[in-house]
Image (cartoon, rainbow, N blue to C red):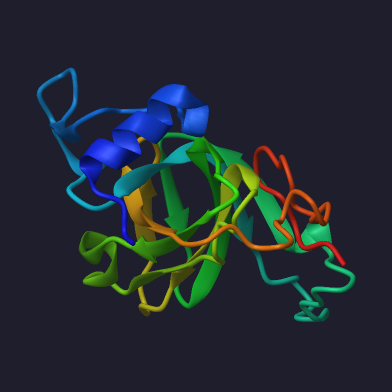
Amino acid sequence: MIWNDSRIAEWAASGGITPFVPQCVRVNGSGEKVISYGLQSFGYDIRLARQFRVFQMPLDHSGVVNPKDFNVKLLREFEGDVCIIPPNSFALACSVEYFKMPPNVTGIVLGKSTYARCGIVANFTPLEAGWEGTITIEISNTSPLPAMVYANEGFAQCIMLEGEEPTVTYASRAGKYQAQTGITLARV
């Protein structure tokens, strides 16, 4: 079963999503239009936090991106309301929201069409049953031009799918990304 807005709000009120925005926000407190975030009909639109790690090519063009031994020197740390991602490059970010997935619910996260229409692609893994933490987000700029992403505005939507509780949850198997906060790099 896919959760609707009422069920998501009920779960969020018990600490499932913090901070939780109980409506769809399209205009900020200053009256400016924003990329929507908050509760939707059948999902929750997450926001990007202000912390980013932007990929930078080494000056000598050496190095390899290795998920088993990630070189943090390939990423430049940045904090701000707007992040510019170089052409054909990527950045890492995290969600403002902290999720506590129930033992019988998995979240599927999909990028928002506003960004997709600009060549900005979001990559997510499932929010497994029993997992908790902020979501680490990989943002790819597939365009030949620099691309902007906005902190504290909508970036992706999480859809909650409920099923029978599995024998083993992410929490019970002590998953390596359990209770992560901030931008979490690859672990083996």
